[in-house]
Every structure is written in structure tokens, then in C-alpha cells.
Picture 1: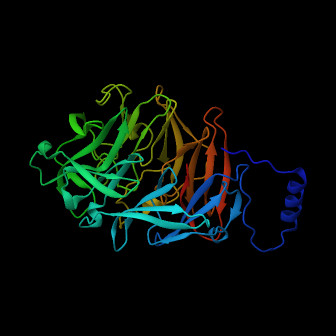
Picture 2 (picture 1 turned 60 degrees about the vertical axis):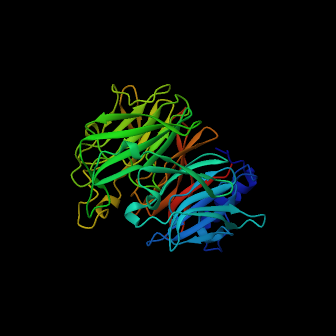
Picture 3 (picture 1 turned 90 degrees about the vertical axis):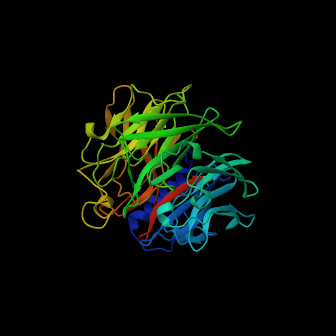
Length: 410
């Protein structure tokens, strides 16, 4: 990303300071060499509340989140995304919907718009995707589970809907776009769920197939449905999108996480190739080839490689009593998988505990990864140079907060 340029004298002074091991006052970490870029840092406490804080330039070193001024407090600090100068995230506080934030001229994060989506429960949380400055899509069960709502991300006003009710199969629970609203080559790809809702937050599918409906963006019309056999449960939840388009190859990758209670069929990564609107029947990655029982729970694709996390031991979301408890142990290692050979290589990045839901992201030729763990008391950001395979630490939080997300405003 931005290579840090420090005068030799400053480096020497810092070395002396740390060698003396003196307990001095907290100093705001220095930015990287481009002070004009605004980065957004999300931290989370044990109850998932936290701050969204701005930073001029990407921070470096170790620092407490309180050293970043102008933060915005949230009851749930996960799941932010950026488009242009705005930050968008699902809000699950008293008023449910899509929240928009911005950094004002004073350098403070403030709310800058809200689109209410009064879905009935957290089990039916929303989902959204922003295509352009004036075109966005979201799912809101209060307006119909088999409909995709449209909105203007600039005005934060609903503009209409795409009705997919004709795709009903009469299942007890049906939804279109609740977990996946992806975009590739002028098309939207939305997941179709057919099954039964139980006490668990996932639905139990009626069959062992996953389905994607294809919508033409220009006409806002349904075009086709593609399916893949021996897979289940595309996506995980709305603030943790499990799809990504490889910016180099143009291929769309999606995670079928499986039934997280039975872990059958096993978790898979599927592909829709550039120029196609159908699943590639010749390709999938199976978690059984790397660790099982376990799941793929992260996805980023770049230049023919899949970046995901592989657990160091068998893992299940419902193992160990309360769901997610043992699943959030220090067991998840960032890994690259070559699409052609399917060979996995563990990255030199600290182990993660699946507290943060943000996916890796690409900026200025570097790929950025977030990890949190208890074993090293680490919560921070790493970057990978995809050309050389080398990694380096960017920064880490101090004082017990977990790193929940990092964005760079465009």
C-alpha cells in the first residue's frame, strides 16, 4: 500500500526510546507517506460495540483506538463497507436499516443518511449491495422475501423493487438475495433459499442444491437461474458477504458454507466464470481437501488465487455448547489456494479467532488481512504483496479492543 518513508534520525530516536522501555504517554501513531488518504478503523469490545474512527493515512505501530479522534460509537461495530466518500453498514440497533456515515470537514464520523428496513427479527437481517452512486440493492423481509428492493445510495431513498415471486417453489421458507447480492459484468447474482426455518439461524434446505438467480442490471429483469448440486447454504449473514470477483480474471467466487450443524454437504467454494452466468460445473474447492469437519468462512479472489481461512483443527459452529463459542478459538489461519492446482499455502499472518467479519481487500496492489487472537493478544492489520508473497504488519490495536474492520475512503 503506502510505503512508509522515515528519516534515519527518527528511526534511531524510536529505537532508543523502546530500548529504554520507559512508560511514556500515548502518542498518535504516524500515518503512512500519503497523508491525504482517509482510512476508517473499526474496533470492537466483548459485546461487539465499538467505534468507527477516521485516520489521515494508514496508522502504523501499536496504539489504542482512543488515540484516533472523531470516532462514531455504535452498539454493533461490524460489517462496514465504503463507496466513494461514504461508509455504509447494516444497523441492528433500535432502528433497523442501512446506515450511511461520512467524515465531515472537522474530521469527525457522523451519520449522513438512513434507509429503514424494518425486518421482523435478527434471524431475518438485511443485506445490501451498492452498484453505483445512484443504484443500490437490498433485501427487506417486511416487503417480501422473494423481492429485491432498489435504492439510491446518494439520496438514501428506496426507488422500487425487482419481484422474483415467480421463482417460488412453495417451500416453508423462501428468500431471494438475503445472503448474496453479487455483481459481475452488468448482472446481479442473488441467492435463492428454499427450506425450513428452525431455531437455528440458518434455514434447513429442502434439497442439496444451491441456486442463484441472474438479473440484468440495465433492464432490472430476471434472466435465468443456475444451480450447483451437492452444496448448501450460499453465504453466512448479511454483514459478512461470502462472494468476491477476481479483479484480474473477472471470475465470481461464492462460498457454500454448508449446514453448520451437520456440516453436510461439506463446505465448498464455487465459481461463475467471466462471460458466463452459470456455475462452472468443472470447478469447486472442497473443505474436505484441507480440513474436515470445518468450513470455508472467508473469501477473497485475486489473480487466480483464493484467499480464505483454514482451521488448524476440526471445527464446527455449534460444537462446544453455545453456537460460535469454540468456533471463535485461535484456530483460523489465512491461506492462499491456487485455483489451478488447488494447493494451499499458509500465509505469514497471525492466527485469527473469527471475531472480525470483514473480508480481505485490495488497495494499491496490496491485499489487506485482519486478524485477532488471544494467544498473542494480537488485533491488527497485515498486508500481502501478491506478486512476491511477502507479508508485513501494518498496525495493531493496544488495550484489549479487537479490530473489526478497516476501510479506505475513495
